[in-house]
Image (cartoon, rainbow, N blue to C red; front, side, top):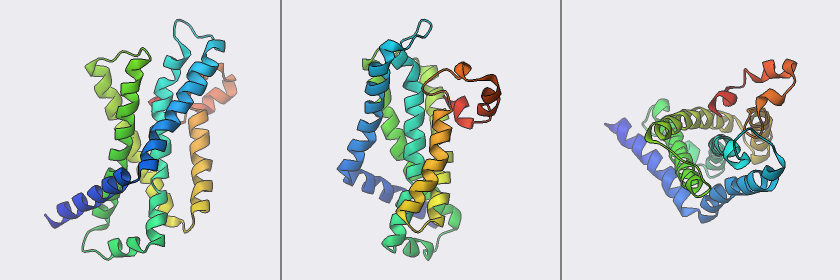
Length: 207
């Protein structure tokens, strides 16, 4: 029972911190929308795809990008907690390391799913149609992606002592995963030799 209360307390703290930072909420919503507007509607008219509007084609990629970027970026708050010495207080708490990790990870996943929910509502206004089956499958897949990416971000953050170091590692991992996932263009457009390499990118299967 103590482990459960500790897990809930850590999760609740992350949600409170997220909801308290209005600029963070705003940026987490505005950034994906800017990508949709710039690429989906700005670049879209010049892109030819078979029987599908470009903004609808990239929407799954924008959802995936939001989950990936926000989840891994969540690891930065481990670095911040170290600066505030909050990390030390958590470590000495009478809780298992697994509970500490799960509390932080689930807090990050919840924040990401809130962003995804808003974007999926926005999708209705740009002509997307959902059914309950596809909606459920999408949420489950994105939740597992959020768990994996948040865990990776927390693992990286636990080894970093500076924001700059975390940012460099994050960019090195995130950018190739995203740009070679098929989020912005059909993977069939790539050269055959490179397409075989891209197939090992786990993000391409999510998109």
